[in-house]
Length: 206
Image (cartoon, rainbow, N blue to C red):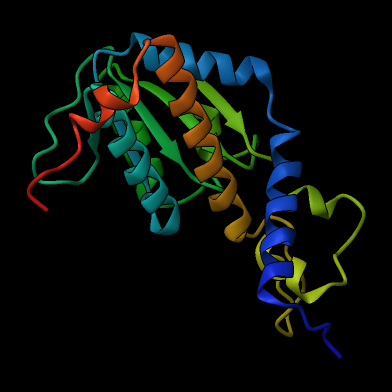
C-alpha cells in the first residue's frame, strides 16, 4: 500500500531532492557556462516539452538583464551567426528535434552549452560545454521503493522492465529552473544589475 503524504511533505521532499542535485553540480562547469553567457554576442535557448518551458523562462530572465536572448522556433528569432551561443535544456540529451537544432547551431559556427542529467548522450557528444544536473542519482543504490520518489525522478514501474536510460522525470526540470535562477542572480552580481534595471525591461503590454 502506497504511503500517503500531505502537499507540504511532498513539497519538502521535492525541495530536498533538488538540493541534493545542487550538491552534484561542478563549480568548474558552472563557471564555464557563466563565461560563455557573458561573452556571447547573442544567446539562443532551446528545449522540448517541460524543458522547453524552463528554456523560455531563462531567455526571459536574460532579456530582463538587458542581454540579447532568443527562443529557438519563435517567429521573430533571427538567424544564428558565428560566435553566438545556444543553451539547450534536455534531461536525456537525446531528444531528436533538439539534437538537430544543436547540429545546425554547430554548423553555423555557434557555441553549444548543454544543461542535462546525462554526460553520455548525443547532445553531450557535440556540446562545447556541459553542465550536469545529476537528477538520476537515485539509481545508484537500486530502484527507489517509495512511490512519490519514483514519480519525481521519473523512475516509473508500469508493468514493464525498468530502463535506467529512460528520460528523467520532473526533478530535472525543477533542478534546471533553480539552476537557471541561480545563474541569473550571479549574472546580476557580475553585471552590477539592480532590481530597478530589471524592472525597466518588464513587459508593459501584457
